[in-house]
Image 1 (tube, one colour):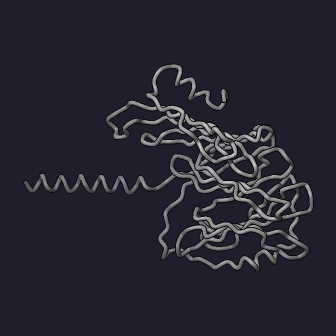
Image 2: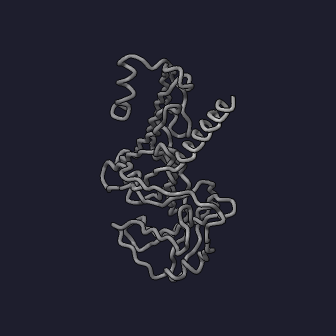
Image 3: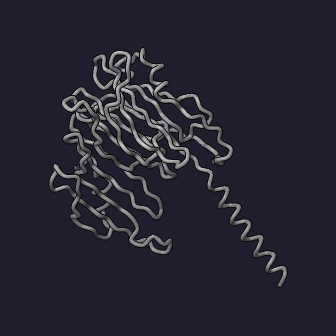
Length: 293
């Protein structure tokens, strides 16, 4: 009896130890943009990191006003688009971000500041400044509870004015938070155009179109969504979803769900059908969804 109990304890300990070791995550965040009719974004590298305890972190409070004032003479070439700067502090895995960007081929330079709340461990907001003379003037502020990894710029509708793309940290499946901000000349402010939680993007500026792919897992569905950038908003156009009907590791029957936006002036999708995912017709429709829609 004692041997049975001892073996049970050892087995449980082994399972716990294995699970604890598996918590170390491999993530990738090397994303590349190209200015063309089609711009692809994908993961090509991975970065390993260890979890840190709060008491082990040595955090310096960043004075963003002073940091911006020290960069009033910054120069950016239009082809460089955006310069991301991480202020000097000891731990930066989820730290504050400062980026400088040019949205047009002119002399206007903007700064994007994303402070980090170390107590609450969430991003508190995203701030947009414009350099006027030798001063940084705050023109827009957005509340944001999602962490931000870095910013990129992309002209989503080929009008010569680039939008700001906020990129979060990826999960184990390679999906991350994406938000898009556009600048309004008429209002002299930035507009939050919405976002998507996806892993791979393909931008087609001449069509004002974005193709996003949410990469699922054994228990989460795979989702392909076509968006249009319209009136400074990310509007879903068509979406296809494939997943398990019952995700319990016992059943293998899958479903396919197709939705459309019947009014591209609104951010809404309407379910067209949901059926069992079987047969060549549905498989071909899913696999060639972006190409045929």
